[in-house]
Length: 191
Image 1 (cartoon, rainbow, N blue to C red):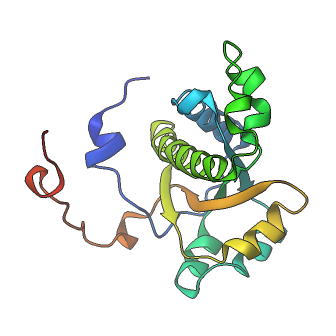
Image 2: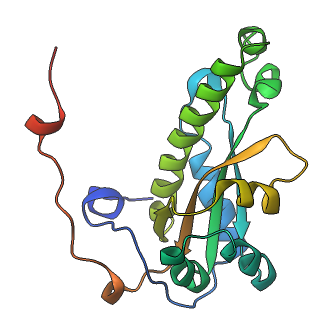
């Protein structure tokens, strides 16, 4: 794989419109197989993903989307729900076998909550980069009813929704003009 910073960062955009071309399941597996290698604290890997591809599942999801996100979510060939497993620590004996990391979380709900949110968010960033790396465009969103998404897609589990990403081949004509970014001096300091 010969990737460029343009493909991953400077030329990549948040897409709001997608071509109707389907995304093969093999491409979604390829995306995940890249994403999973990104580091998380204690290799906790709390992200869980539902790839919404069927018309029936998409219609369910649309009932939980904010009005401004309905059309672009309907149009996207795939919508990924990035969740966070609130019992991720149960898998730590498998994922971090060289220490008793599971015990670090036992009975400490604030630490579980913070670690699940932080690390599933980190994994969500890797998810977007992995999508770009395999030739897909991404449109991450936070305009939705998380409790409703949880009820519709994570019922009976300990997974909660973090954020949602539309995937496919973006339509350049539906991009907004590029928004500015903060300069190094505005966003950074060196201590």
